[in-house]
Image 1 (cartoon, rainbow, N blue to C red):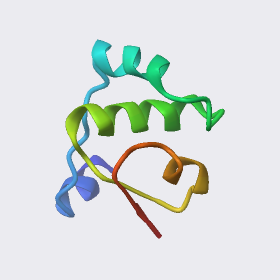
Image 2 (cartoon, rainbow, N blue to C red):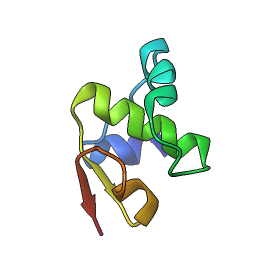
Image 3 (spheres, rainbow, N blue to C red):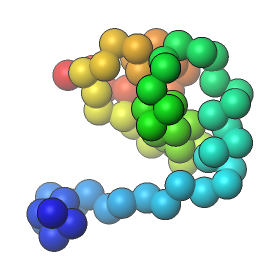
Image 4 (tube, rainbow, N blue to C red):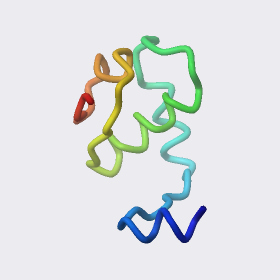
Length: 66
């Protein structure tokens, strides 16, 4: 699977301490901890999240709803 991900130009990002701490600054809009860390990480790194999750779109983060 990692080879396929890299083949389309996607690189995995490590979850750093600052990302984990930033989760605590997010409003409680989503109960899924993994999604909350993705939001915190995207905000910290200035990345866009491509998602079909209506809850993630509500966060103050750049999203591309699909």
